[in-house]
Image 1 (cartoon, rainbow, N blue to C red):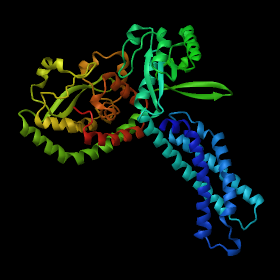
Image 2 (tube, rainbow, N blue to C red):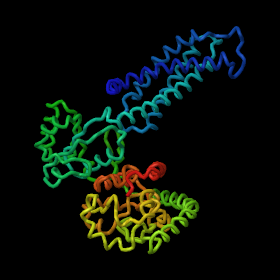
Image 3 (tube, helix red, strand yellow):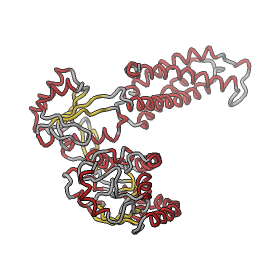
Length: 475
């Protein structure tokens, strides 16, 4: 049932839009004539809704045509709501202007022009609400696995990883990467976080059938022209949609700006690191919210410090070297959650390590103290890192602060995450925390670095609160 509705989602949305135009006219008529809004209507000028109903039907058809021509029903996945609202606003303005001009040209003066003006505003309001609800419904359906497009990546280079981390960070887009192919055995036969290596490109035909692929994305450089053409032919013969990442995007992981000069595309490169004005804005946010947070947190920190001291012998704080922005070392502060000789016990516990890559994590770590278990579960052990934030060594939001021994075994692409200040919370924390694999965590961190904005930071901070309260993935 859900799949059937999703298949006709755009048609249903269009019918809802048409109905809402009629509703908008009724509300506008009711406000003007029944509620006598603006000024009292002369009984001789009273117009029954039956007249406006005919206008509303014509207006609904014209609205659907305008929405269609403006591309409201053809927005690609991933289009932001602001872009959709912009099209809705433009379309509603066109409809309102045409209605008012039509009324001025063809109708007697006793028909209220105010009804048309109010109806135009209400059309925009109702359509905006309807399209916002449509997005919410689609998001929930996709999270339940309905309407997911199954993607196969051909190539496992930097651009392929960029696509992976984008789809990983934005699950609401409704894409699922079934795996990737690459002729390099070290790439094609090795899983990358949650993404499965399916072997060499010669496995394409088998992979398309076995994984029920809906779409193939080719990320190979253009020097593999013959290989690309072969993949294109196989996909076309199998009836699978195929898209190719332009070779110019292989030159850099930076985002590009594209302008058109008389039909000639002009491409400029924008750095994705958080620097210059962006860094200044982020730092101002850290100082403002970090300072306020410290004032609020000080009484809580005093109680926690006393609890740590009374629970087990040893210092209140655990100070550890971590790797910060651009690989610089700093001393990170945390409440001590383990016994004092925890580091020396680590070699004996290697066999219990539940994390992949260079990480070391044990869900039921025997080194934790009684208070320490509570601190870890609630993430309150990280409260002292507010001081690192105020010192400029960390940020409220950013990649997880790495240990030097972890960075020493990074693959080259992992180091991209070091281009930002590490954070007390981050995209990986609100996406699963310790439940994520190492490569998956790094992908989310790099996505954050490449797509930073003040809005993203605020969104992550708000999403952190429920994650901390329920202790999801914390250990």
